[in-house]
Every structure is written in C-alpha cells, then in structure tokens.
Amino acid sequence: MLVSTTAIDITPHCPVKLCGYINDIRLAQRTQTAHAPIYAIALRLVLENSQLLILTMDILSIMKNRAEQIKDSITQAYSIKKEEIFIHAIHTHAGPSGFSADAMGKEYEDNVTYREDVISRICTGLKPVFAKAEEARAFMGKTEIHGFYDNRNDRNRYYDADAYRLQFRSDDQLIAELVNINVHSTVLGPTNMEISYDLIGTIREELHKRENIYPLLCIGTSADISNRHYREGDDFKELNRTAKGITNQLLEIQNFTEIDMHTLKLDTFSYTVSYDNTLLFSGYQKELEEIQKNLEAETDKTKRKLLLSSKDKFESKLLIHKVHKELKLSLLRFPELLLVTFPGELTSVFGKYIKEQAKTPFTCIMTCTNDHHGYFIEQDQYGRCYEATATLIPKGEREKMIKKLGELL
Image 1: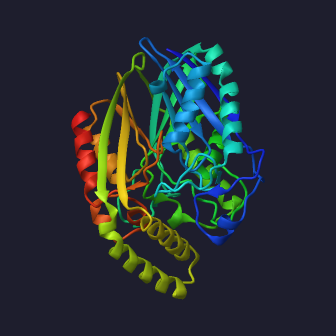
Image 2: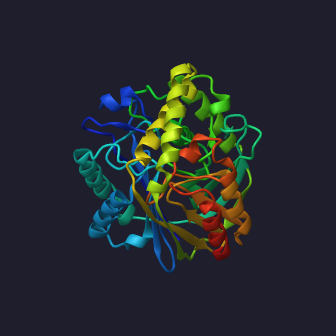
Image 3: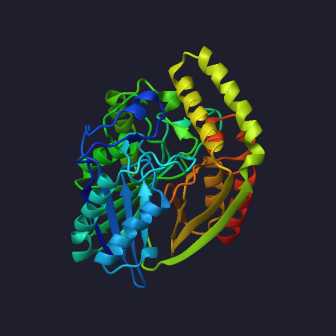
C-alpha cells in the first residue's frame, strides 16, 4: 500500500458569511478575519486494485453539487475516478460560505469567488499527493473519550464515545493518520465572527504539534453529541481547553493493531425519500406560533439559540412543497476495516447498530460526506429535541433505512 498526505490552506481571501448558526449578526455581517488558517487535508491510498482519496475541509457541510465540482476538477487534473474521491466537511460552525447548506438544503451563500479560489487551490495543492507516495503499513488504535462531551440532549442517554486513530507507518515512522471522533464542532458561540476550524480543527492542530504531521480528522456519529454539558464558556479559551483535553485522551492510546488494507471493495447503498410536504404545513405553523411565544419569554442563551434555529427551520419547511431526496452511502470494505460514509448527521444509536451489524474487526463511520441531508434521528426523539426539527426525513424513515443498510453489512 502506498500512502501520501498533504495540508492545503483554504483560508478565504475575500469576505464570507459564516455558516452554522442563525442570528441577526450572522445574517447581516460577512467577515474575512480568520483566527488561524483553515485547511483541506488530503489522504491518498494506492492499493492493489484501486486508489482512494479522502479530502476533509474546514467547512460546515458539503452540498452534493459543490462536492461534484471539486471532484470534476480533481479528475481533470489527475488520474483518479470520481467514485474514488470522498469529500468530508468537519462541520465547524465558524466555517466560510460557498460550499455549505443547512439541514433544510438552504445554501448559506453562493460565494462563487471563494469557491472557485478554493477549488483551484485544492487542485494545485494535491500535486505532491499524486507525485509521490510511500510504502506503508496500517495500524489501528481505539479508545473512548469521556469528560468533555456526551449526548447533548440527555446526559443519561447513550452516546458513542468511540474514537479511532488509523496510523500509516513507513519503516516505523508515522507518515499519515486518520482520526475518527464523534462530537459536534461547536465550542465557539453563535456570535463569534472569526473564521475558525473550531473543535475538530483544534484537535488536529494539537496532534500536529505532537506528531509533526497533519492528521486527517473526520467526524462520525455526532448528531446528538457535543460539549453542551461540559461547557465553561464559548470562546477560544474554552476551545483550547476542550481540544487539549480530548487530544490528551487520544494520545493515551498505546495498543495499536496492524490491519490489512491492501485491497478495497467499494459498495454503494441508495435510499429514496419522497412525500408531499404541504400536508404538514398546518403542523409547522402551530410549531412556529409556539416557538414565538417561547422566544418572547426565554432569556437563557443556549435555549434562545435553539429556539431561533428551530424557528428558521420551520420557516424553511413552509417554503418546501415537495420533498424528494436521493440518499447515497458508500461502504469502503477493506479486509479488516469497514469505512461507512454518510451524507448527513447520524446519531449514536444508529451508529451503534451499524457497528454491531458489521463483520469486520473495525468499523468507522464518516458522516457529512459527499452531500448533506441534515439530521438522522431515532423516532422516539421526535418532539423532544432540536435535531428532530432540523430534518426533512419523516419520523420512522431512518429506522427503515438503517435496517436495510444493516442487511448489506
């Protein structure tokens, strides 16, 4: 197996909207101020029967059409197939516009200037990845993260604490790494106006300081996981405290198992959701009226943030008459590792089910990849949490989809 990796600076050179939160500040203002450079991290594997390119970007989400634009540019410049490229968003809520939509499919801003510049920078920045690769062996380490995040809707409810470090070593030297962790990148608050990679990117930077490589970090079953119950602030001081604490736990992994990744079998799973949304309009209107009443009385910052976001989602739903979604997941089957890509945000319960059904020693789930269809929440959580509001997938539909997926694993 040949492995190569690189970090590509995608910091905006023009004003952008920040994506992730809905409030008057974010809606009215644009910014060009970055707290630190943001990146796209590329990892390329050349295997016996195929190759694989994973590209993570420091943005909120990746729309399918924007992912296709990136893939088209890469395939025109390099010898690789589109189906071998996977574009992942780290889901920072302080990321720039140009690629991202919210859970309703509403684009934050069609920032053509930034998007075209980034695609150009990515294509140029990938040159060393395709020019040179090193022979490497793969090693997997696993741990659980505690004390910094949990199920943000109910701290007594299950959350996926698993964290994986997939290392690629050449002559016992670490040359590349993929880290799979389950947490929302939402430490910074909704009034922050500095471009930032937030929690996931800060963990990456902490690992970079210790290991002298830029690991590729990707989020897994994070839909219902955040630092909400452990929060001591929502600024960069709190971001650094949280990231360092999580990084220290990742670095405590001592036992790594060598795994076989010399071949790859790529399967796809498709699922269609289609319905008349106008039949639900009266219910949406009632919800909006209730939210408005609550907003007038609520003073808690976190609760107001969720109410404002819910208000925005119901207003968006009233503009959508027909829902038709083509959901596409990929199953990357290595001999001893299954990597599942998911076009949205998946909860811990569904992630647990997928891992239980898998037949490989290790299973990693990479959400927010190649497309974005919002939250995928279990049906007993409808009416109880914001995530069930911020979705166009009907109640119970996720269970049907995940069950069918499980039959393929």
